[in-house]
Amino acid sequence: MSDTEQDLERRIRERAYALWEEDGRPDGRADEYWERARRFIEAEDDPKGPDMVADPPL
Image (cartoon, rainbow, N blue to C red):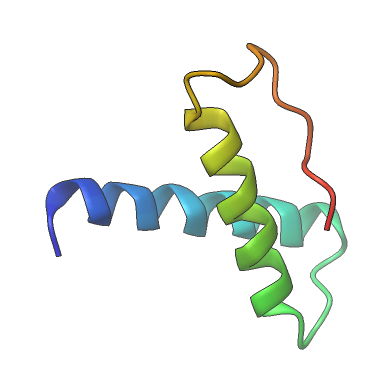
């Protein structure tokens, strides 16, 4: 895994953890939080995207 891939995975993991904590740490929804975080990071990194990125819909 390249440094770029590792950095992306780290950012997604950290965002997913933050989202999970914000929602009260529910059990059994790891995949949902990972996907939400992945979408958020992709939107954040999109050069055509807005300057301020809202939490993308599920």
